[in-house]
Image (cartoon, rainbow, N blue to C red; front, top):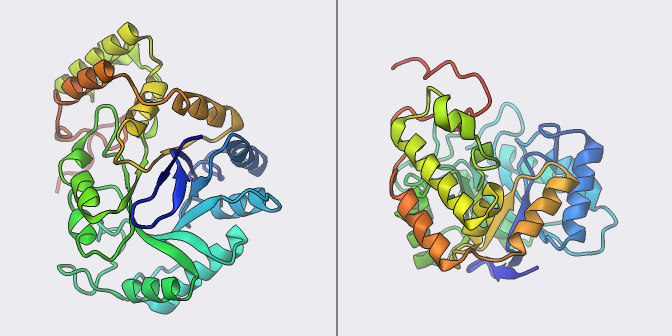
Amino acid sequence: MNTRILGRAGIEVTQVGLGGLFVSAFGGDYAQGCAAIRRAVELGIRYIDTAPTYANSEEVIGRALEGVDIPVVLSTKLGGRPQPFRPQDRACLLRSVEESLRLLRRDHIDILMIHEPDRPGQYDWWTDPVDYHGPVLELLDDLKRDGVIRATGLGGTTAYEIVPIMRTGRFDVVLTAFNYSLLWREAEIELLPTARELGMGVIIGSPLQQGALARRYDDEIRSGARWLNPPRRKQFRALYDLLDAAGLPIAEAALRFVISNPGVSCVLTGARSAEEVESSVAAIEKGPLPADVLNRLDEIAAMVPFRPFEEPFVLPFGHPYRGPGEAR
């Protein structure tokens, strides 16, 4: 499998990595998660990302990789553990790192990220929210100096709020989810250029938009999904027409689109089973998309350049939706 260097971190990773969210109780039992992880390694995947908030993902990964001699790059995060979680308490953060090491059965962590540093309503990391100071930065520096971690990172889900944190120059890697895929491109505006300028490694999460690009929803696009705004509906129709003309399955196109960008180090597959891992690897091994398909995808993406107002963060295709929440 082809590899790329994770920016200034200097760590070699495969073009596709395994996202750990669903190799956990969120996706199935231990046996299923373990089988997915081991199949990923068998097929050449050498990077796995997880987090304390991904149910028992760290534990499953640690158990699945025990006794595996092939080196695998692991990343995990700070955030949400232990409870009550105190993001500005160094001792609390250190306990989380120690627990990650125990569960992953490692003596070091390749990449340790701050989880959702761009969402203070979720985790209040910063004593200075303008210049981004906080105990977490000193801890990361100490852990890196002592060899407990190899690289530092940011793992977020915003396209703009995370950029000033990147510009502090304190981080080696950025993982962005939901902001770079076939139809969602806001990371192209500021996040990706900033990462390139700073030499940061780039990891793309949720290339299938939590299922919206995992399969086709022709019936709902045609006449259902009342929550789907007209511009996005028209855009989906144009995408499906292109996929038909090119003979491309939608999930394959979504994964190959991401690796078509040489500025992206790795794309994560959220596979939850060995079969889904095999499907993702087979898609990636076909390589980048043809130039004419990429050009047409750019045109289709430009039809809706920003998320429309009140579009659900995760599109509820195939599920009941009660509408937007309370107005404030």
